[in-house]
Image 1: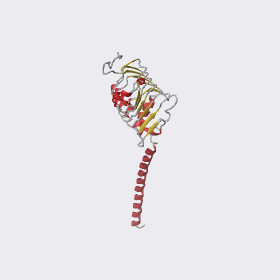
Image 2: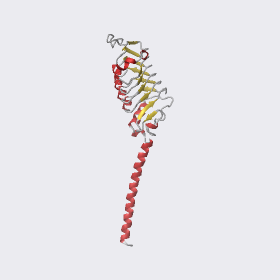
Image 3: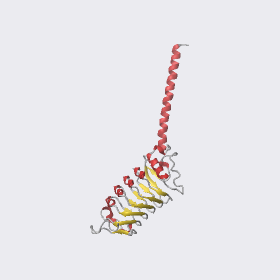
Image 4: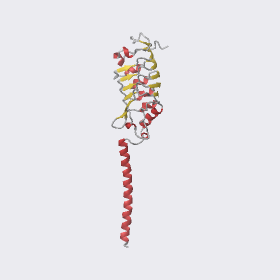
Amino acid sequence: MDSTFLTSAREMSKNSAQFARIVAVFTAEVLVVVLLGVGVLPASCNSEGDTLHLFRMGLKDPANVLQSWDPTLVNPCTWFHVTCNEKQAVTRIDLGNSHLAGPLIPELGTLKHLQFLELYGNNLSGRIPPELGNLENLISLDLYNNQFSGSIPGSLGDLKSLRFLRLNNNRLTGRIPRSLTGISKLKVIDISSNDLCGTIPMSGSFEHIPVKSFENNSRLNGPELLGSVSYTLGCA
C-alpha cells in the first residue's frame, strides 16, 4: 500500500479524534450555559439558594408550603413563593399566612437584591436579626402577626430604600430606635400591639406617622415634646 496514502489516513484519523474532542468540550460548555439559563442546576451552585434552604431547615412547615424548596432539584428562582429578577437574583419572598414556625436566620441579610420580605401571619419567633439591616434594596419588611421578641434592631435604620415597615402584633420590647426616623422614604410604619417602652420619636420620617401606628404598647409614652420627655421614660 502506498506510504503517502497511509500517512494521509493516519492524519485524517488524528484530526477526526481532535475534532471529536473539541465538539464534546463545546457541547458540554453549551449545556452548562443552557442549564444555568433555565434554572435546572442544583441550588447548591447558588449562594442565595443555600441561604433560603438553610432558612427552610430551621422552620416547621405543617402545610408543606416550602415543599418546592429543594436544592437538589432546582435553583431558587423556580421555587414557589420566591421571585427573581432578570439576572436570576432573589427579589421577593412571599410567605405570608403560611403556618410557618421557627426563627429568622442572620444569613437572610446576605440576599442583597431582596426588595420584599413578606413573612406576616405566621408563628415565627425569636429575635429579628440585626443583619436584616444589610438589605439595602429592601422596600417592604412585613413581620407582623408573629411571635417575635427582643428589641427592634437599630440597624433597620440603614434600610434607606424601605417604605413599609410593619412589626405590629408581636412581643417586641425596648425602645423605638431613633435610627428609624432617618429613613427618608418610609411611608408606613406599624409597631402597635407590642411591649415597647420609652417615648415615640417625632423627628424625620416619624413626623407624619399617625399615633395609631404605636398604640397598644402599655409602656410607651409620648410623643416626644422637644426633649421635655425622657427618651427612656417607662423603660425601667
